[in-house]
Length: 369
Image (cartoon, rainbow, N blue to C red; front, side, top):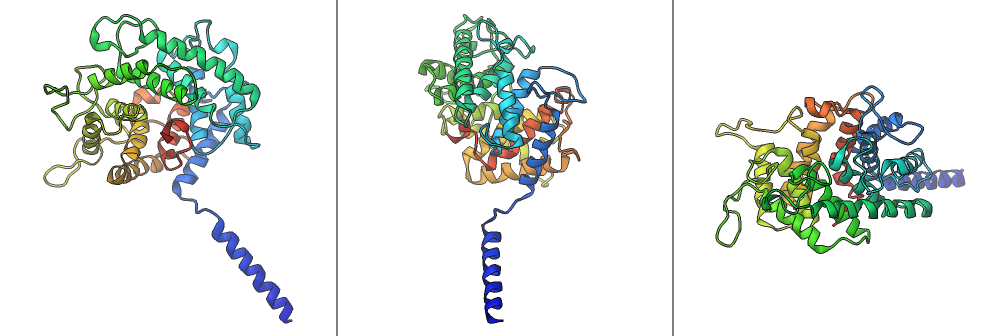
């Protein structure tokens, strides 16, 4: 009898150790798991991700976003899981010869233009650090090198005005630039450089200079911004909006500009947009789920504010979780409250929501710098 009791107590102790060793899942873990399950259900046999209830549009770039979102929560192409297999199929789709033209351009086939080209290049370069197999690694690297070369050529195109120098816009030959397209190219170049591809320092420096020109403020004699609570506009001279301000913040950070005056100023401006209140303590000018380009802006906001640390990170976490978690649909998807983003479909909004919530994991290489 004593032996049985001793054995039973030993088993209880072992079970207790096993239970303690298991990580505690929170609401975000559950939410992103449901989101990934939704994305898996949208994948076609050819590896692409397309909203089965939406329009068949921009399926190359949507596949890239879905791939990055799955990687951002810890899935790897090398995993022998449903998710790992899905990611391998997605990569094979992205590197198909008909996805990229002879100039290295990804944005022509699915109509996503330079906007999509930057996202696809970023997604593929990130995969180089996440366990793709030897066969895929060689093909991905080859595609990335051509894509990066196109980004660099496009940046060197003579612009209509010096204020656009260093930036990008909708086509490889555009003579102007805007912040939304420029940020994706900048992040793609940074990721490619981190993965060992040849990216000249001058190209990153020129992109940083363009981003700083997009910060809405007068400058003092030394060139520093005078308005220390402002943000980045869509183009130089234009006022800041939530999405462009957050995009500029993260782009400068991944380029190493962690303590730039523009970074410090825009974080305070963004806090006003997400937590501001009037003299009576009532919310004012706050971003909400239905705000213009909410998903796009919150992706950059969540990652950028996390990099600022301390109170910024904590308040951004509360804001992001507080708005996203209640809006998740029963099937695991998110449907945008903004008509422009809603037209992009559920693969887009669900992928972006997962990328917003994945800030707690730090799995994507681009966010580890």
